[in-house]
Image (cartoon, rainbow, N blue to C red; front, side):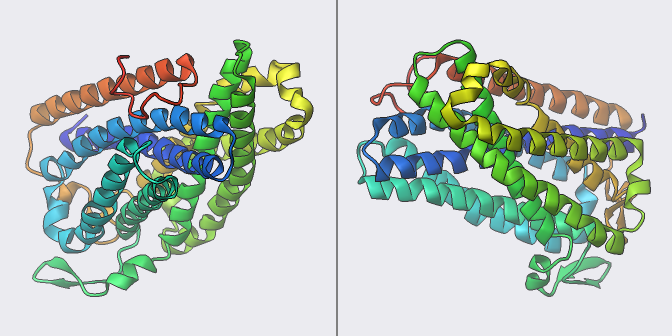
Length: 387
């Protein structure tokens, strides 16, 4: 593989890894916010315990997701300096807003939420988790704004051989932005719903004594999945006419890998849609738990929405080739001056770092999930008690 191929492969690996963290973060924080809302409005202590348990899993994934995001950002300067030079004034604007506004606010609100347990008024504490949720989705919105510019560059003019931003509002009205960001939102909710469903099913398979806790968690996960899956499928298909208008050769450009990714995404989407709607009636009278067989399918199904999301992401990104900024900047022209050996070393180093972070994330989440619910006095941050 030549230098360009290694650079593209490195960015594909790191962005795919990071995207998995982002999806689970967005999906889980939404469900945690719903759980805490129910805990605040009701006197049932099980909702507060649910908030703490699932909140701990969310915090682990969020912390390691930040690490993967920082590592990924290094590549813009290391490997793709041509993009910053040519289109940095436009492409960098939404990224700057995402970092300075959405991400900083999200981190601040999350810190207050973590350390505000039993210290803040319950309504103020509830407001914090919803602020975390809103800023998390705002962060995703600005990232997708920047990505949509790469897919269909708007709001700019070329001066002295570089692009200058002349209409910021055009970035938000980009035809390849609106449906795409809605698609990501519902994909994240599907990931969160399937994850909560699968972990709850795992505890029922182990014949947990926390029946009420995981019954409520299972119901919430199934309902969220059943509501989000048809929307993610519908919005996904709604994008095809838009893609056909602005990127008519996308399917051909995506090649075999992108086509396979799209196929997996569609197949898994319909499987999850069918499974979620079949499962909803089984919630009554705990038929899911009594039958037991569906519980195993729920556990096995945890990776499916992640696989579908990566497949869709590969199709979106590979279908833009050979352009980095569609129609304006070719991928090979955006590369930094680097040797093949240097790029190979960078690829191995970045991949190793991401593999370590991914394994650490999965191991920590698996241990906390397997341990089960925590007591009301246990902090939400998993870093406080010894693991």
